[in-house]
Structures are given as structure tokens and as C-alpha cells.
Picture (cartoon, rainbow, N blue to C red):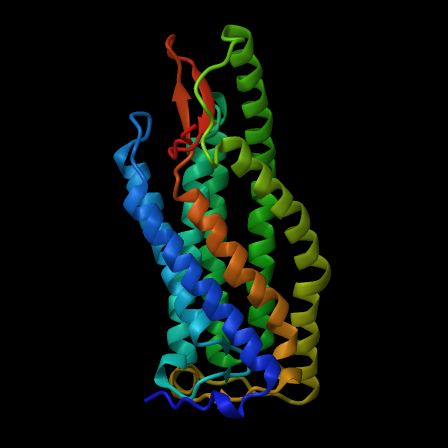
Length: 308
């Protein structure tokens, strides 16, 4: 059973936890609206439309769960003394959630690519997916053994994956610009109205994300894990065996609200649990490459129509 003891929490813990729960409730409300109001257009294959909506729903639901039961995997820190805060359960759900989010990105970037670039983009997307699966394996290994070197390799994989994806997103921006210019020449008085989140928006958001994310991971995040690993070596740290580590991750929890222990992860968890779901829900609108009257690809546009 969950023991409600928030009265004993420090002010920062109550404020941060309230923020996480508020954002989670807001996201659940938004996703309910999207699921009830969205309609598939003729240019959207059913499998593409439903896949993005299913994957986005999985992502938002798991993030809401993780927001309600904050946990830090390597140190076993949790906010609640409950089996719902089990580190192994959290890590398993996080793997499903992160793969779902990555699949959304892969589906859209492959589907919105220009016809001549479909095969290179598909190959890049496949490699990105395989690298992320490898990252999840490293994360599980680190969670079980509590050795920071595995988390360093996990974060390296994430950085490599999006470094591979950056040329794809730049391609989407360039291709979308060419298609729009051609569309203006063919129909200078206007055309179909843009959706709320189209291919250009997706390419722009992901390009800006990669430009900031990849250098940060390479310069700050990954080195910090290697530094922690070196500290473990100096302390003669002995990693958990597989059986011991699985049981420890499943059952052991260090309930703490000490700011000094949580502070290193406050910023990235806050961004992860807010910006991640917002992007995922935007991708649920399913940007597609439409086809004009002569059968040529036109522009990437969202399935969500804007009423004027």
C-alpha cells in the first residue's frame, strides 16, 4: 500500500511533484481529446494513422505513470515506498515507452521523405532503431548491475542515433521547402490549408532538437556517467550479479526527498516528462506526404484540419 506522507516532504519535493502530476493530468486530457476528435484523411494509410496514435498513447500513459512515481534507477531513489515504485518495473515500462516514441519518429521521417530519398532514409531509420534497442539493453544492464559504465553506453547510443537522424531532418526541411515553392508556382492563389503540425514543423523541431541534444550528450551527459564510473572503480565497487541485481531492482527502494540527491536529475526529468509527451502528441496527428492532381508528391501536412 502507498503511504501518503507528503506532510513530511520538504517544500521543493511537494512543488516538483505537484508540477509533474499537473503536467501528467494535462497530457492525459489532451490525449483524450486527440483520440476523440481526430479523423483520418484519405491520404493517410490506416496502419500509419493508427500506429502513430497507438504509440503516442503508450508513451503518454507510461510518462504519466513515471511522473506519479518518480524514481532514479542507478541509486534506487524513489519518492514513494510502494511496489509501484519498483525500479525494475519502471525500467521495463521506460523501455516500452522510449521504443514507442522512437518508432513514432522513425515512421514519420520515413513516410515524409521525398520519393528519391525513401531507401536511404529507411536504412538510416532502421539503424537508428537498432541503436536505440541496443541502448535499452545497456540501460537494463546498468539498472541490474548498478554500474555507471552501462548508462554511459546507453546515453552514447542515444546521441549516436540522433546524430544519424540529423541529416534526415535537414532533408525534410529542404524537400518541404522545394515542394512548397513548386506548389506556389502551380497555384499562386493558394491551396490546401496547412494543418496544426505538418512535415516542415516536424523537420524543424527535430533539427533543433538534434542540434542541442547531440552536443549536450557528448559534452556533458556521457562524460558525467564515465566520471561516476571512475568513482565507482576508485571505491572498489563490485557490480551486482544478474540474479542478485534483478531481485534488488525489483524489491529494493531508497525512499528519500533529499534535494542534494535528486538535484542532478531534476532538470532533465522535468523536460523529459513535459516536452517528450508534447512532441509525441503532436506526432499523433500523423504528418503525411500528399499527392496532387498529377500524381506528384506535394507537401507534408497534418491530418488535423484548422477551421476558419
